[in-house]
Image 1 (cartoon, rainbow, N blue to C red):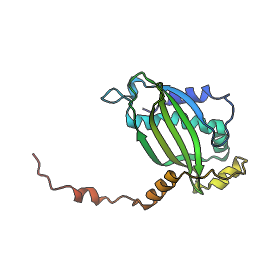
Image 2 (image 1 turned 30 degrees about the vertical axis):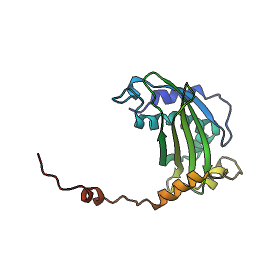
Image 3 (image 1 turned 45 degrees about the horizontal axis):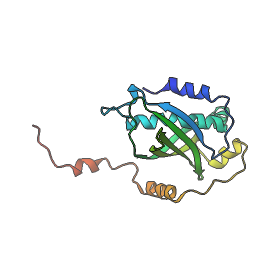
Image 4 (image 1 turned 60 degrees about the horizontal axis):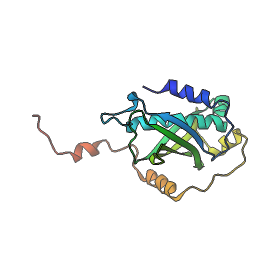
Length: 190
């Protein structure tokens, strides 16, 4: 189930927080609850991706993006994610989440997020490729920045993000439906 109560708590908690300029870090703190864990009593990898919403959406609120989305009747989508998991987060452990807009290109915003354990170790790191949409499709980042009243260019895209976007551009879409079926040997029912 989506953590809607936790999301509203975060939005309420940061409703009067100082605004953030593009690229500034939003910091929030979270607890790994029993409903966030997997069979090994640690934060489930899919749930970690969902919990990153608890940092991204308040970041959008504090940067003024949510106000623009409401005013223009635009949406916000995730178009891709690259994630690294390095340290387990066990049930009832606290994490500090850091979220920031890393850079953007003509179509996408790249949001960097990480979860840090109380011992200072990074447990996971994600980069999200996000887009603003209207009824016609993706809204250009130039149009978005204009709607936000900003006249600024993107910070340089880190090399590893650039290479990720290039790799994603080479990835076939739609995926080949027959690839898995033909790669598996014939199996006889038991």
